[in-house]
Length: 312
Length: 265
Image (cartoon, rainbow over all chains, first blue to last red):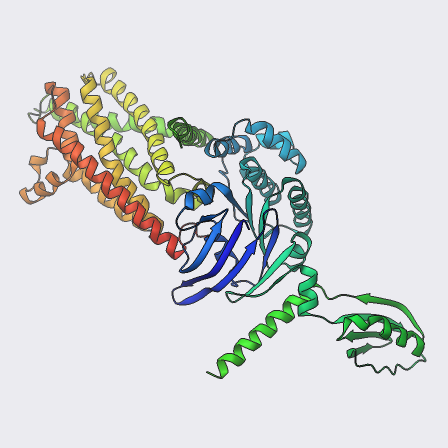
């Protein structure tokens, strides 16, 4: 395990930001921290990258304790956020020359041009001042800066925040490409379920400073939201009279019908009953999105917490 | 980090700062002209007083004024660059990328101070040339007197580090220190002798190392030697200042790490 987080706790002025979270990440794994705003994602990343001291718990990065060997940890990790900045008055070349000297990287120019080309930056862009860069271009250059530094662990803290949907999709595609090639261990934080589902191999769902679930995206969806959904269009003159204990509930809007199944494993039996019972068209089976699972999970978690506190 | 790497990093900061200065062309020209205007104004003022009978200052009052202004400018740039270093990176949002290096935070702070030193040197040469060529004030700057000037610069760097640390936690604090530092012009004998101050104020003057720096520089230029008191006070004050600066920076850094105020993103 390259990252170990054990019983991590942090408070800010009496408010609990992290309430004893634990997780482990394997070398080369892309691990997602998913949660709403204020869940504790950025606080976790800041502690793991030695930018914040924890109140409780142990964090080890590459075998080094973040409290005892912060410099060793910093040599192994880098963070990319949407808020990262460059020197606006300097050109991309000048910026990268400065940071490369700091990182002790030689032949940075070749690397910059090579990585930049893969990310869709052109040589003429490097002569421009950063003040003339769009948010998307700046974020690409930010990724180039990290690739030049080449740390084995990368923290991506909501890197697409502020990007438009098209740039965001391009950026994710670039990340995916790089993650496939570079063998980096990545911690990806986001409140965007789609991003996390697309990029991460495993996910921890954070809510109010606690990890409420950890697992692969598919497994999490099944665990949190086991319902599956059968959608179809009913012939006008037919009346649906469907009963099965695998069915959770049925929604009807005109002749459009949605059948929610409590037991997804019996889906074939239910479909058979439907097609034998009525005339249908446009029949399709849908899985819940991670977003649906996430919303339901956080709602349930908050309800559980409220019930627990109402007894106190 | 070995010595070569350390100097490579320091050099990177110096190059970056000069590139940044050059990117603001008018500011760059102003940076070159400002000390010339400054030394000219005080040179003329000193000469006017000398023409009116003088003050009895060795070498004339114009010499007194010019050496005061050159030394003050030298010290002031060092102090402000080191104290502003971290706050500036935080302000523009590049601090995280510098902090994430496996190096001590002293590197960017000392590198910015070194970058400021190059500006001090340039301004020093300009002012010296104007004093010599325009006002005919012969500043007999020997190697020991120049080294003493560098020592004076070093003596305030430590206090700059301390303020750099405090500014991580309290962003407004730098304005307070700026006022305090500028009040030193009044107490330390930049424009007039300390003896001209009320006796109570003279106690404050003697507690500020810059007073000894100015006295040492003036004496070395006019009499060719540096008074023993100044020679002792300056390194001691510099070491104490550096110790205070490093301890304060370390304590403030730890508090910022605990409170989550290091990057503020």
